[in-house]
Image (cartoon, rainbow, N blue to C red):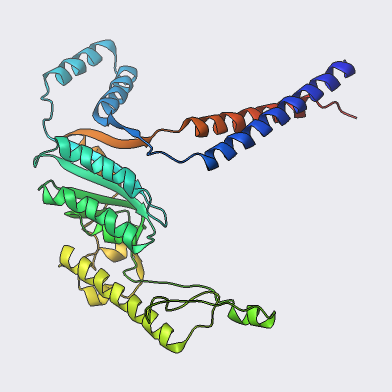
Length: 329
C-alpha cells in the first residue's frame, strides 16, 4: 500500500509539473500573439418569468389542490403587462473599463425600448478617472435623449464618478445607508526626488510646452508646476459641479460640492437622491406593473484564456489529490 501511495504521489507531481509548464507556455503565447477584438453576447433574462415560477412553486406548497387550482385560474385571467422595465447592472472600477459593457447594453435596450418602457440601472461605484466616468455618464444620457425614463438605484455606493453617472437619472433611489455625493476631485502622487538625489541618481525630463508636465514623481517639482496642477484640479471640479447642477437643478450645488459624502438618509433632504429604497423594493413593485428583463453583455473568453483557466483548475485539483495521497509518517 505504501508503494501505491508513493507511486500515486509521484504521478500526481509529474502531471502537475507538465500542466504547470503548459500553463506557462499558454501565458507566453498570450503575451506574444497580437490581441484581437474580443466579442461577446447579449443575454436577456426574463425576471418576470423567474418571479412567476417562484410564486407558483410557493403557492403550490402553501395551498391545497382546490385553492391552488382557483389561484391558477385567477392568474390565467389576469392581463399581461405590456410595459417593460430593462435592468442594467454597473459595478464600476477605478478605470471604469466596465463602460464597454455598458455601451453594448444601452445600445441593445435602445434597439427595442420605447417611451412607455423604463430603464433601471443598479449602480455601484466609488468613482475613478474623469474621462472613464464621463463616458459612462454619456452612455446613460443616450437613454434620456430617446425619452425613455431612467431610474438609478444605489444600494451601497455611488460617489464621485459614480454620482456623476447617477445624476443623469430622472429618479435616484438609495438605500438608507448607501454612500452618495463626494462631488470633488482628488489627485496624489509620491515624489522620489530627494531619495534619488541622496543616492546620486539624476533624472532628466524633456518637454516641449511650458506645462506639458506640471508635477512628476521623479524630478524636482516647482511651485509654478504645483500651482498649475492645482488650477487644473479646480477647473475639473468646476466642470463636475456644472454637470451635476445641469442634470439636477434642484440641488444647491455650492452646499454639496465640497467633496464630502453622505449616507442615503442624509442625502435625501439635500436632494441628492429622490427616495429612500433598495433596488429590491423597486423591482418587487415593478413586477406587478411591468415585464422585467435584465440585460447583460457577457465577454467571451479567448481560447488561450480558456486553456489557462483549465490548466489552473487542473493544477489545483492534482495538488489536492497529491495532498490526499501523501502517507502519514
